[in-house]
Image (cartoon, rainbow, N blue to C red; front, side):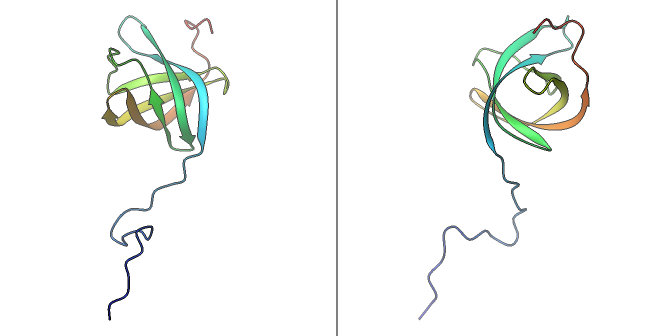
Length: 103
């Protein structure tokens, strides 16, 4: 008789996913293209990155600055994945509040 497979058990060959606390924060994606801004919602966030929801028509480069007013900091981001109106980003550093942003 074989032992039943636990669907919640993680495959030992897979990298362990970090717990990502759910949040609901407003944010602004600031691109290097004439300092254009795209409003977004931070859906979950952890020390190394976040999941962002934005308008479907938004064009977001692979590297940008994410300003989160609630945190009072801007995160340098690198896109790790894209799905419809959501992107996953890895934080590569922080900066103070951008001078060109009024929020």
